[in-house]
Length: 95
Image (cartoon, rainbow, N blue to C red):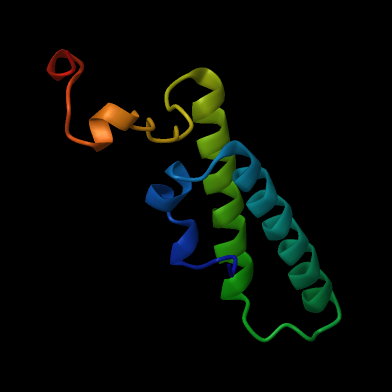
């Protein structure tokens, strides 16, 4: 996934697990480092990219902090259906 795109919109970040958020944060910080290095050496073509990556990092930190404070919960796996639920039978139907 490319950093600084619509893939890191707040709605999408809410669906990521904690490990995935940490990984995306690592990628974004690495890209920011590379962009700053390019800027310092005069090789940076798109200065707007710096701003976009900084905003992505802020979004990720915000989501992590909201989870820490209990404002949001990390996504949970859907509950597995039991065999009798998959077959369309209820427990009362077994007799």
